[in-house]
Amino acid sequence: MSRPVRVRFAPSPTGLLHIGSAHTGLFNWLFARREKGRFLLRIEDTDTARSRSEWVDAIFEVLEWMGVDWDEEVVYQSQRFDRHVARARALVDSGKAYRCYYLPEELEAKKKEALAEGRSWRNDRRYADLTDAEAEALEAEGRKPVIRLKIPEGKTVFQDRILGEIAVENETIDDFVIVRSNGTPLYHLAVVADDVDMNVSHVIRGIDHVTNTTKHIHLFRALGAELPEFAHLPSILGEDKKKLSKRHGAVSVSEYRDAGYLSDAVVNFLSLLGWQTGDDQEFFTRAELMERFSLDQVHKRDTVFDLRKFEWLNGQHIMALSNEELWTLAKPFLVRAGLIGDEEPCGQDDGLVGGRPVDHDYVLEVVGLLRERCRTLADFAVQGRFFFTDDFGYNPKAVRKHWSKDPDGVVARISWLRDEFAALAAFDTEAVEEVVRNLSEREGLKAAQFIHPCRVALTGEMAGPSLFHLIAVLGKAACVDRLEKALVRLPEVVEQAAIGEG
Image (cartoon, rainbow, N blue to C red; front, side):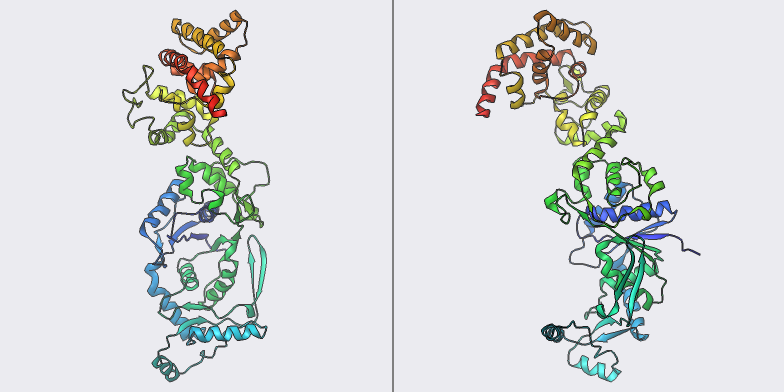
């Protein structure tokens, strides 16, 4: 009979939650949800010098933002010190571990001697079978023992759910320390003791833990516990095939959240790092991931963190939201950029753009126009700046391309547009487009010769949403006003763009 599925995610609160750690946590969570099991959270905070409570809070915050929920009370490893020590003493009493009184300098000398002779050195267990009197005499000399686990002869073999069979000769595993000379338990003991007490059925972690796993198997057996199943996830590399680090960009989940990535996209993207369904599907909802995820489809080879793919996926998830949902998520980024206030109408000063209220209807129209062009929520503040303020500059490249080549002609065309727009009774997409088409036909010019200079005047940019739609959203007053300002500033702007090019 198989054990009920119980997996754990065990981050250390020594910094922001790293992409690699979040990846491990997500795979554990998806496996638990797919198997109708339990997902447990354990904070491995025994490194008191580096662990901080604010990092613990940050871990909770990011997991909650990702939608990765846990099923039982959080376990804090630092609160289980006595339990770990008791386990170690029981191992000593049963003869499966021993107190070792070697001084650090003695061990170093023995290792150097072995190296000089071309052999590896394993602890010779000189102190493994001391009498109480012999131990007391050593301690009287001021020696403080560590506790080491006895590694048996033979071979350690286990079946990894991802990597297949792994076999290690035990002679390559030293009798490793499980309790320091100051009495504090080490990582290996604390992890295994907690896994036993939490009844963990599957240990799913990074491939860099394979060496630890061979040691942990001996601890599980020494403690008389049932072995969990092991699954080691592929490493995440940068696009240069080197270990993911700051040089590849942001490395913490919160950095991507703050840059405008959606939690749905983060979960989707991380799930694809090392897992494939066998088809071409890349866009997944959480519900789909929980239904389809399987360790059998996690591959062995390293996986590459492709930022362009991440951005594309984020854009796909943006497109999957309603305008209402998008506005709720994008609004904080516009507030942070100083483009709007917290309350609606939320424009600068009097809450108006060219006399039009920046109200809920307005912002939903703006979001609807921008959504196809935005890869992150932060893009709404960058690409949509001109929707919320008249304070924007003219992109020199746009000026050189669409104003500088024929400034007199541009002045004439912007003047005609200003006058025609001002005379419109109904200022909507169809009416605006008709004005442009009629003017181009009247003057024997291409519509683009009106459209591009007009876009620069109204937005400062070379490209953007449909011009006719954005004009209708901005409204008559804002458009006429900006065209008038462009006419005044055009000579100066063209001159500055020319200087900049030089």
